[in-house]
Length: 278
View 1 (cartoon, rainbow, N blue to C red):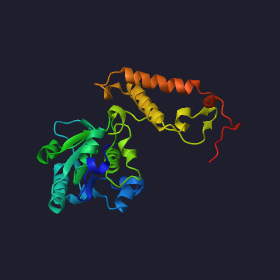
View 2 (cartoon, one colour):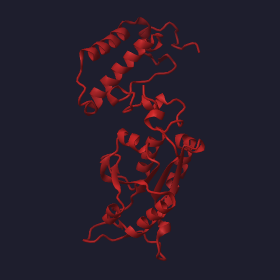
View 3 (cartoon, rainbow, N blue to C red):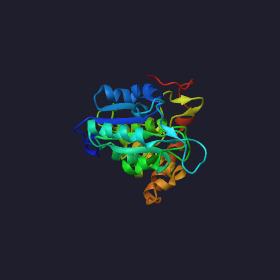
View 4 (cartoon, rainbow, N blue to C red):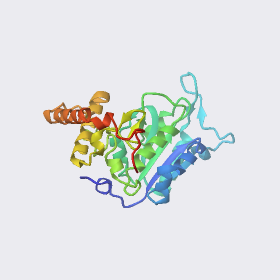
């Protein structure tokens, strides 16, 4: 089976540069949880850069009215271009991505691709958008996190950063968490993940599927694969365009369903209050 180290070999610390007018909106998030842990382990560096600092007028203007008329304001090219040029002069060339609704939808495969980069730059938009010359002159890729509109790209940048960082070897406590997630290399057909359960064994009359406490690891694996495939086909069939139902899949699903349905303990637990011993 693949490992994160074989998929994403790392020789240098990954540098994320996030260009934003509101670095304070991201400061707490990048210090918390997985992103904070990854930085403390020396796996990644995350720089939040206010491109307003690269303005040259006394009003520190970053936007102006659009040519051709219309509502709203457009981000000017000068401060952003100078900010990017300053960064690349200091650190070297970045993989440059601008967050905008018109961009290519971000997928797990993009996160895996970016996890192989040494430097990633994310530009957060505001207002009506960017002067188009920013994108053409600096070779930006346009990326979207969904078919909806936000007031800025900060939340999208946080999503992409975390999706990439959690793939870096040594960030998560157990690398199987990343490999077996929805869309991951270990998910059946790279589709959705299977359902998860933990204690108590029975909660408000609903029991954990008996196969998961059977101790039969092969049966557990088959149950999880069947549930993941079934969930993907029902919710996101486009993720499995070349994976029609096979006899083996159908047999696995039928076996899991039968095992749960025929097991009396799942619906009639021995303990009156449904609690397990530790």
